[in-house]
Length: 343
Ligand SMILES: NC(=O)C1=CN([C@@H]2O[C@H](COP(=O)(O)OP(=O)(O)OC[C@H]3O[C@@H](n4cnc5c(N)ncnc54)[C@H](O)[C@@H]3O)[C@@H](O)[C@H]2O)C=CC1
Ligand SMILES: O=C([O-])CC(=O)C(=O)O
Image (cartoon, rainbow, N blue to C red; front, side, top):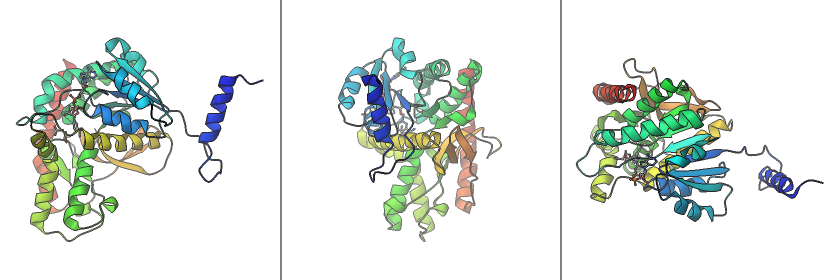
């Protein structure tokens, strides 16, 4: 006789492997997702969106405080994942153990007048300690770095992982999806095309001029004037500041970022599960631009993380100039991160 608990898990595995039309399919694998900073402005809506994702079987919510409440709240939603809240450093190991994907929106956000780099002094230390824990408790997880300044926090995490001997450049991602989300929205508005059909690659990094949307490669194609393209580029680059200004001291983008973070984590889960042709823009270790060891571009995500870094394609003269303009800032942000982590 099968024990009742085993029977229950067999039943749920079987029900997960039946599609709505009743045909048997591959069972959906068990996947643990950990969110570090889960009680914050991004962390809470991101926890909600990940709770709604059927690819997640275990949702682990970690913060220095407040996560038991967030976890109790989202755990009542009748979706697949089991949710646990972990609060305080003593619980970080348990939060991370066995994680397939770790999403990091931990750290302070901007206030009006600040640049993302102004967050470095506080957030660099937070990211360093969280990356140290990841290298110990879930060294094979795909890491989705949201904490700013992304241009530096990704190199910091890479350096920490290198020191710990766990670095796999295929598994570390800077989340730049919000830049893509913004570029799509703004482009659809000007091009008068259905926003759901729009695609715009965004390359470079995630701060000011380092954000370079490639509207020349946008689809569906639209014949926009040069000054419109210029304005769309500036608005995409300043999208974060637009929200910081509108929130007037109450932080930066949280809801649109949670949406973007959920899209990117979903792409990672699909890649891990072997779904073909999962392509998103992300800031990763890259050799596309010789002097920039980290660079955002389209990447194909698969079972081991980054399967392929796609080329930049052809750039307009305006975009070529934008690429030249971003190099020095991005290079110094990368170097700043590496220097901090190697101290
Ligand atoms: N990559 C991107 O496109 C974007 C990045 N961000 C960045 O995301 C970060 C978080 O933003 P918000 O959620 O608005 O800030 P928030 O202040 O509302 O939340 C941050 C959370 O991090 C937690 N935290 C602090 N130290 C921690 C630690 N050592 N371990 C775990 N959790 C810790 C805090 O307790 C808080 O709950 C900021 O650095 C912000 O600049 C924001 C928007 C877009
Ligand atoms: O602007 C900020 O500080 C937050 C952020 O990265 C964004 O909204 O793109």
